Every structure is written in C-alpha cells, then in structure tokens.
Image (cartoon, rainbow, N blue to C red; front, side, top):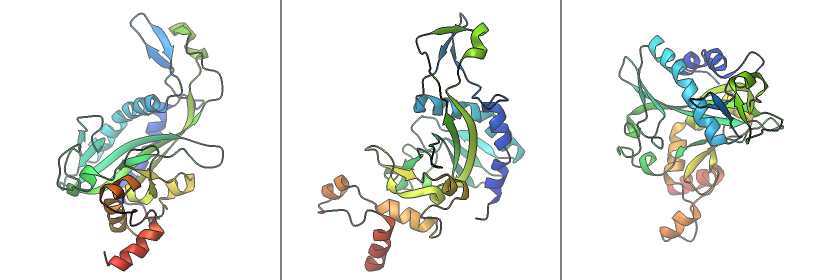
Length: 261
C-alpha cells in the first residue's frame, strides 16, 4: 500500500510516542496515580483507563507534529465528540485524527478498535452535533492506533506505594507499537463490540499495519455508502423491514448492483 504524506509524516514520530510511553526496558512509563501525599495507587488492567492515559500522553507529540507541518491543531471539546484531534493545513484542508488503543492476543491479532459512529454525524454530514466540524468538511479521516501487550503478573490494587517503591511497581502494559491508517482501510464490515452503533476494525495485526481491510480495495466511497445505509436488526424492524438489506460486504455488493446504488 502506498503511504500518503500525512501518514508518513506522523509515522516518523513513532519513536517519539514510544519514548513518551515506554521505559528503556519496554514497560509502560506510567505506574499509577499519585496524590499530594506522594502515595501511588496502581492501575488495574482497565482498557478505558489505559486508553485515556495513553491519549493524554500522545498530545505533546501531536503538538510537535502539528508545529513542524504548520497545522492548526484543534482538540475535541467533549469526550464523546468526533474526532479527537482536527488538523487544519496551511491550505485550509481539515484532517480528522482519532486516537485508539488496543491490546495484543497471542495469535498475531488484537482486541480491535471502534472507529466511530455509523449513525448521527456520519449520515447527516452537514450536522454539527457531536463533531468538531461537519463530517463532509474533512478531507480525510485517520486513526492513530497504539497497540500494547498486557503485562503478566499480579497487580495488588489494594496496596498503596510510595515514591521509594517506584521501581517495584508492575507496569500493567508494555511493548508499544503504532499504526496510522485512513479509517476506511482498517474498518471491517461489522459493527464494533456491544450494542453501540460503532464501526468495528480489523483485528489482524497485518491488516492494521498494511491498511488492507475489506474496504481497502473498494475505496472510501464504498465504505461510506456501506455504513451510511447499514442497518442493525433493530434499525430494520424500526423501519418496517423484516430484515436488513445486507449484513456484510459481500451482501452489500450484491445489493448495490441490484439497487444500482
């Protein structure tokens, strides 16, 4: 896959992200939370907490990246707004960047990312609800993904440590790797986990690194059309249909040809 300029420029900062997140031996540099009495409380392997801390630690590197490329950098005003970061280029083009993290499995796969909603602003592309700028104002949509390994070992969440104990506190994750891909290239043709109406991602490491998900060879227009018209079973019933018109990319392609979408 040919990499574009934005992707290449951001990937050059992988070393900076790693230096920010890792100790020299590959452990996560974050050991826990500290209070004003200098007590340290360990972090459990809670992916939401880990993800938020990683996101905050990435911001200084992203600011350096923006300054180098003369991009204006705008953070999301609310936690549930899309995207996490908006870059505006000197040519006034808007680029969306969402920050994601996930953990490795032992079989060259990961738990996966959720890639944003396929309802709301994704379908109403002039809407300003839950999004920094209307979706159709963005030239491209990227994912910066941090991939890590969960650390083996017991975490004593009941113990309170001090600064003197810092070296013996087990980091809950280690061995970071990073991917930068356009969203459509790593999206799968299934929603993400749970009942939320979010787009799921590929879980194979090779597909994430190469951007070779099922939509990659069809392009962003097919990705957009697929998810703009995708229906869960509940959405189909609410629309008076016995079932959704399609449930995967193969069925969508047949449906599109039939309906001449």
